[in-house]
Structure formats: C-alpha cells, structure tokens
Image (cartoon, rainbow, N blue to C red; front, side, top):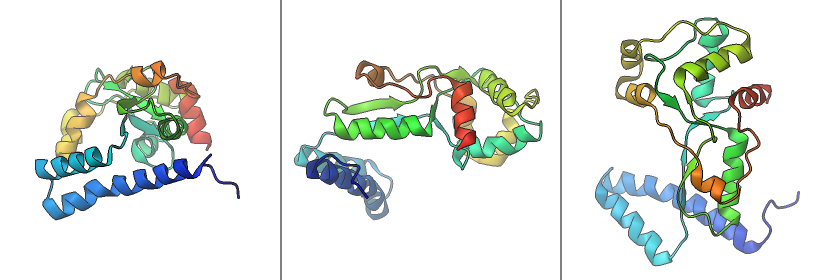
Length: 193
C-alpha cells in the first residue's frame, strides 16, 4: 500500500499533530479543565515553534453518525422539522471536505491559526430542515420546541438552539476548493456513502 504522505517530514508532522491532539486530553486529566492546562499547552507549542491550524468545524455531514445520524431517524419517519423556531444558523460541512481541509492544513504552511471548517453557505435551521426533508422525500414541518431539546440534552441544547453563522473565509482565501459546497448535493452524497 502506498503512503498518503509525500515525504517523511509530512508523515512526522501528521504523527506529531496526532500526538498533540491527545495532549490537551492528557493535560485536562492531569490538571483538570483549567486555564492552567491551556497555558501549559500554549507554552509547549510555542517552545516547539510549531505551526498550528485550528479547524473549527460545523455540523459534519456523515450518515454513519454525528448530528446527521441523529437527525435522520425522525426525518425518515416524517416527524422532523426546524428546531426552536428555525431562525438560528447551521454551519455545516461534508465529511469529505473536512478531510480535504485537514490534508490541506498538513501540506500547506499557510494554514495556521483559526480556520472555519464549514461549507461556504450556512443556512438557517429552517432551510436546513426543509432541504433534508426534500432529500429524503419526507415532510419537514413539525417543529422541535426548545424545551424538548433542553430536556433531552440539558446545557448542550444551547449549542443547537443558538447556532452560528460561520463561513470559511480563510480556507477560501487559501484556495481550498469545496467538493460539496451546496447542502442538497452534500446531503445526497453523505447518505449515499
């Protein structure tokens, strides 16, 4: 099997990123979820003079799990719909584009600092729900009340009910070409795989 890396340096950088990805977990376990853990991590990264690209992802479209996996059953039954009024934005990304961004960040030194790992067009929750219903050939009219989410998810419901309109400005400036920039096509692709 051929290596996906073009050089030993690229393979080492990937391995280091994997290890550093575990570092916050180890620090949090040792020091607790404190600012001290973040400061220690920042000092380590600074001492090593490493380039760090922080991908801030939206809802990853993958029918095998994640948010889309949880949304599919009610929508397939025809009881899915907008959440908490549906006006909040849903910033999403196809799993394939997220992998593409990760690879671009590994290979291109210009990728550093915070980068939004989202598709170019965030939609309102209402439009996201309509599109998902259309792709499944099911109605998407039944709203999910904020209180129901609060009961199901507790404080995590806040993430779902407020949303964020994140756009991948930096990724676009760096020349990233999305394979799935439109939600309807991205949903069809995610559910086909």
